[in-house]
Length: 305
Image 1 (cartoon, one colour):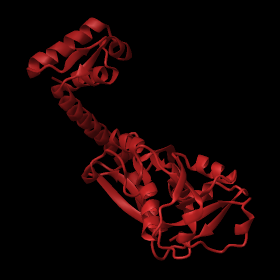
Image 2 (cartoon, one colour; image 1 turned 180 degrees about the horizontal axis):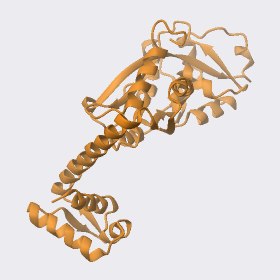
Image 3 (cartoon, helix red, strand yellow; image 1 turned 90 degrees about the horizontal axis):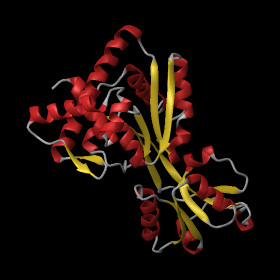
């Protein structure tokens, strides 16, 4: 078995069908079928079961797929490492950000671009689950996320660099004139107000954090809407539907005169943020230097800290 056969196997596993895999590999179906049979004969295991019109990986196939992906990842990392020895810091820096952290990206990228103008960028937004998948596939290098990182990725596979915590604030509709001159909110004052929270099927920590803070104050909030989108949450608030407790940095990307931001009086409720990347993998120079740039920005002596 060689790398070429592993490439064929991965394409079949990805497409779930030999015909489609052969087309993408620019080859005929019979030779691809023969290559798959040779692999199964050599390994002494069945890699696929028939599943309707397609193919489904067996337990042995799932194990080989995991190993093959890891092998190709190491191979590609080695090639990239060799190129960097000659070319220096360049290439594409791929960054993922959960929706509530996207406002944290512009300043670090601007600072990094001044030092390394030959680096370009690819930026993906998504929830923890999606970005965890992209990180494991090496489709992105880094992720800005709220902590804990609620992905399926094993925590022991990840490096996490904590960033400064983000205080929660109360967002109210500007049309609620009784709050025009209000300087701060006591958390207990939310007991009688309709509340909107951020929550998806995969990411629930911020929602649960708000519930726990309210419970600590002795009340259960009246949640009228659980939203998966920051933009939708703020749009509903702007229409007077209710209020929300959100980390302050979320609001920097949404300047809307129809909403008002009011600090919490005690300032105890904060959201932890981290920069996340894969452990035990080659970290390209552009990624290493971007991490160092973040450390400089958030160092105690920095004005941005």
